[in-house]
Each structure stands twice: as structure tokens, then as C-alpha cells.
Length: 286
Image 1 (cartoon, one colour):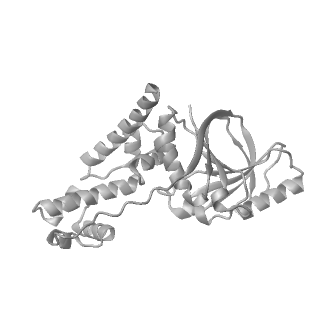
Image 2 (cartoon, rainbow, N blue to C red):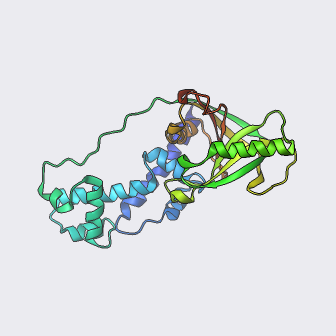
Image 3 (cartoon, rainbow, N blue to C red):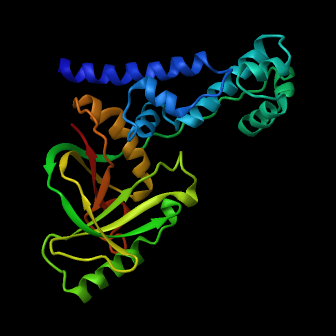
């Protein structure tokens, strides 16, 4: 039990380093690459870990801390708005005013004069998620047909892509037992612009195949993974990842390694109620 606790404490210690760095550098540009470096989190998992522990994307956290600090200075000091803007990292006061009003629905000057105005937001309702695991296993290398898609994750044509992959399997006589539906997400939607997000829609095969047109052939490398079984709607997968990274990984003393995660889908969303969908989530660990 002590080993698990120490891992959780280590994750939190690294998060505290990030928080302190941000708090001490609000008046300067904050580079996310520098944050990843000072925290010693793996670049592959930096955004997932920080979002899980902070409860929001790291970029959103930085903006919020800047604006909350500005709100305190507005309410409890007589500093000019221009000076406050510079102290929290805005080059010009108008940039602070625009961000402040967008966040809180009120301008900095009006907030300073309106002592009754409350800017705290209502807390989000906590979801009850069905997650089992982790089951740590050594996964052999997988050979997969794939179609690479680009765009916002929720808008991608998963169904059509898998239909084309299955048609290719039929034409090339590649069918065998044990084929798997897998998706690899290469980018974080809180970091990469939505139209540039990259996803590989994969169909794991056993037989030899050659790429043709939009259909490629790739290897998912072997290695140790922590597998989590999630039962529920795909709409809540973001919250599932937050729970895995903030709770299950540190509590089970699991160290992340530099490789991408992937998801395996166990039933068909077109023939299954959303709350009964089953997804296996594979997180690379040491």
C-alpha cells in the first residue's frame, strides 16, 4: 500500500511543480514544452495527466489562473487595470478586458465597482462511470489495416471507414478469427486544432496484406499495457480518461511509457444502446 501511495504523491508533487511554475510566471509567456520539461511527465501523456489532475486542459487552467488573479487584484487593490493586465501576462489592457468579459460576463472596471457581482461558476455534476481494471498485460505486436482520418473526433466517419476496411478484407480474402476494431488517436483535442486532429481507424488482421489507395498497413508495437474496460456511452470517454489518469494509474503504481494509447470496441454502436457499449482502453506502461 505504501508503494501505491508514494506513486500518487509523486504525481501530485509533479502537478504542484507545474502549479508553482505557473503562479510564479503569470507575467510572462508560459511555454507548454517548458512545463512538460520541468514536471518530468512523458510528452506523450503530459496533457492527459495535467487535465486529469487539474480538472481542465492545461491551457484553460493557465487562462483561468490569470483571470482569477486579475479578479482578486481588481477587487482588493487600487492598481490600475493596465498594471493588472501586465502582471497577469496580457500585453495590453484591452486583451485582459476582452478575456475577462468573455469568461465572467462583465468588464474589469464594472467588476471593480460592482461589489455584489459573483463570478464563481457552478460545479459540474460528477458522473458515475463503469470502469473495470486495470489489467496489466504484455500485448504482442498487432498488424492492422487502417484508414487515416483528419478532423474533429466526434465528426469522423468511423462506420464508413470500417465498412471500407471490411470490403477490402472481403476482396483480398483476408478474413480470419480474432479480428479487432481499434482506433488510435494521435492528438489531444485541447491542444491541436479540431480540423487537424489525426485518427487511425484500424482493423487488426492475421494475414499478410499490402496497402492500396487510402487503406494502409501498419504495426501496433508490442509492449506492456494497462487495460481498462469501460461500459457506457462514447460521449463520456473524456471523463473516463481523466479518471484513469488521476486515480487508477497512480493508485496502482503504474508508470507511463512513451507510446500512444488505443481503444478497442467490443460491440457495434449501431446495434447497441449507448449505456451498454463496451470499450477496452489500453494505456502503455512500464
